[in-house]
Length: 300
Image (cartoon, rainbow, N blue to C red; front, side, top):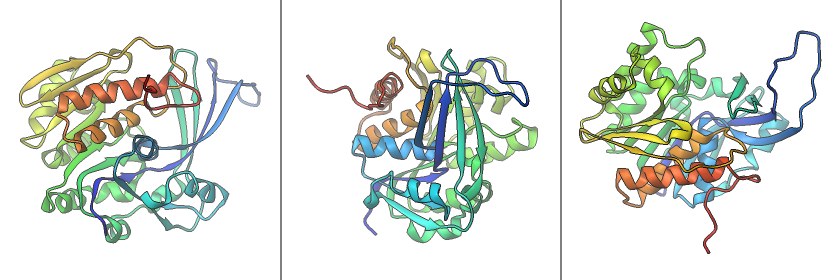
């Protein structure tokens, strides 16, 4: 297999985006919304779409269901960059309901994501400089194998980036311990501020940052994504902030996943962490403020 700069493993599914909706309808009633989109979705799917647009040298390995949604999904990403593994049963679909304040609510049926297992993925994973493990809480079988996956990438000196998403039911003490055990082999932890607080049990973000940074790989970088406030970066014992530009938001679905892709794209081009963070902020800001979605501001 041809070596790649980046390998993406995680939840790729179909997003059905509806909205805006600010009041949830009562049971047995119906409401109308103005917007509807079908799109590649999931933490890993959003990142893969961004990498394709940015021209990142990457590979994606995923399952797909044997239904109409699965056939559609397999047609959406460049064939030379994705290995699709067949899976009996339905393809995972997420209904993303947008709200007028820019927030969104998700309803997901796991479908093929439940069958995403390391034993099936591993023969198709090329050597790479970086690996993104995305949406771990929506890939339950693969998540259970994270210790083995992390050890495998560690032996090949691949830098692992981790964005596990939000757990169904929130963070329990047991779940916190599980995630913290992943961090010593994680080079880039890419989470948002609410996840940082919930994962550590802290109420102060600065305390959460110090706690998480202390668990990471010795050369690790912690990224805290803060929406319109930009990102906070902890690397080499230093903390920096990277502000987001003022924009008119069009669609925030997948913003953090797009940020991840742009950050790893910049690192693969030998940019430093701070320059990579700045680039990622600009890419994500462009994406969430354009419709149809763009990832880079046209030159000139």
